Image 1 (tube, rainbow, N blue to C red):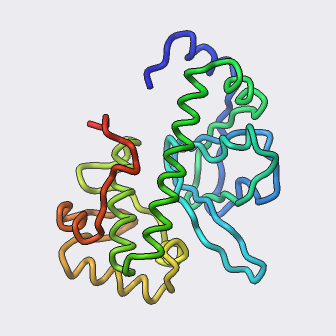
Image 2 (tube, rainbow, N blue to C red; image 1 turned 180 degrees about the vertical axis):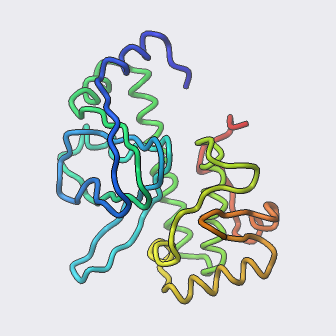
Length: 226
């Protein structure tokens, strides 16, 4: 949305501050009620669940422009954790100020609600991805999604963008072992679809990759993206 001058002033008065987080650092733990709502300015983070046996599952990637926990302005505590996949620069907004915005500024509240709805749509698509697609199609689908999201965030160059995850972290997301993840990446490369080198992903045949993974960007609700 395009902000009015009044809305820009509302956000400016919130008193947001930038903070730096090291790679691997936990930003918010499950069960906490943070004092701040975090917006990613630079780097990648993730939502994840940690099991009692030490295993964890990544449920979402967070990139520049993404709000990590705006729902905490309404809910009592976090039902999952958030950590840094790379060094992160975060902008933090006091949770009380975010509640005030939701209660007293309709258009800003609507924009925040829209953001949450898109997060839910992405989660639904990831559930379908995990439940019905092959390992190769699963990974290819996430690659398609992250290219579109990186373009929206201004972090892509044509069909190439930063993809800083390790194979282990990609496997944690896709429900695959590191060995299986490596085989999937090799197959996609051999098919001439993608290459992943030096933490940068390049998609060589966008139309084939879309068809192969059954990717339809409708769930990202980015119809107005250039």
